[in-house]
Image (cartoon, rainbow over all chains, first blue to last red; front, side, top):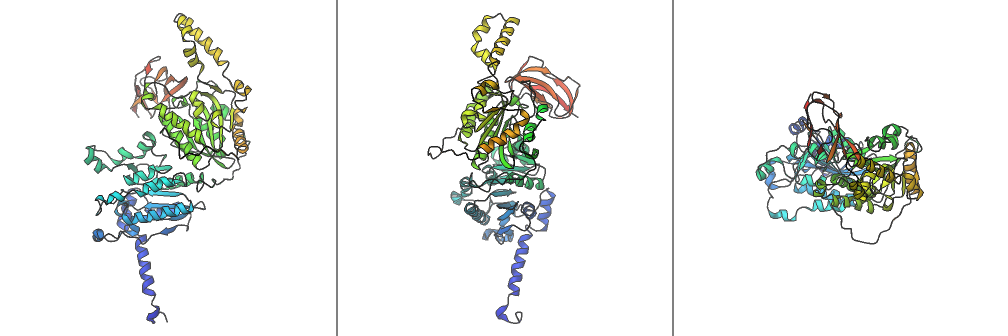
Length: 525
Length: 71
């Protein structure tokens, strides 16, 4: 009998183990967990349950603790305030790091850093995405605040090593400062919970001490700041549930790593579906604005479009959709905002998105309706040339299949950065309304015919001349000239845009591009 | 609430007036820049208390266009 034979006395050992695990599962204890809920946040283990497919999460280091004699008085820290492991999302393995705010404000301590390091090693060996659920005050400022810091920081360097190898995602689910603000900055996609989360290089107490500025976390680094003004974050959502759902949606468009392909999603939406609603969305009058997002939704599978940075640099639209089941990245001018003209932020947003898609072998689709880059003193002082060059750089580098559709205008460098023919565009088609040119007719008139205009008397006569000259130039700006020279591959009925894009992707699915060896280019960032 | 121009432009049309009730997304003014008509939309529901521009005015990025009292 095991219970009477002291050589087989497992009972107390197993009970002790069970007790330790039960304690770890309680996180910071009922009071702190309740406090977490009162802040509108779910406890970390509930977040994991929502995020991973049921029963798939394999935890590493549940029994970790702070192990710091200086913190002995504070008792033990469940999982050392950070849960790490590998779970499945839609059947694919994903590594998750989830900070537990109920333990020392989710701070980064020595032991939980070990756990995160181990997880990153697994990520690199397996080439699986890593997702950070961030609800952390940053580094645990405790016993070791001295110059042992000289050895710190490997986390960020290793994130950079992972960049473009596996998808990296950050979900901001609480106030994150310093270290836990740089983690998201080095990921590919950042989602923030409105009113609950923030990210800033320093928390408000440190800011007050350092600069005297008296601000709240929300004012400094809330979702409004980062999704509308700074452009640091990609998406703002209402609550934890929507946040985790957004991360899953994002991952569904991406492969597990840079050597595999994004999963196909079956659709009943036929490849040759005509999108006649486009006739009512896009005005033929070239100066009239419209909402390009409606065009995008009209052509992608099932109208399902996952927009990135929708509230920032709204003059360009970037996001993921699918075409006949295959993930594509869409870069589209937005005539509704700034007439679709490109400025520094639009170039920044599009360049980064193109780099993201190219890194993970996601084909790109460009929808042109762009009058060019914004000109003038304001944008020159912002470095528009540098930012424009960055977009040129990204488009030029991208070796994924690149399809272009010229809806209406596509002028000058705007045409280039939107994947003009010279940028290894694999299939470029124009609508009957397409105007591809170095600049619009009015611009040409003002430059090439300035003298002639000045010679005409000011008033109606000069205006009439200006209109005549513009009409003369406009006659050479139409899709038939471009198609006649075989510089666009076809002119299409706008309602057949979906079919044309899918045909272009199919015709170019074997694309291979070899470039001369280099360590890396010198990016004009 | 102050509504400002997002770009250096000419004012082409003013489509609202003092006292008008506007809804979020309504076109207040149409600017003309980069060969495009660029609508300035109301960011909120409210009442127009001041219109700071008239047709053919020149505005630069950040210039006041319309002031709206939130409803």
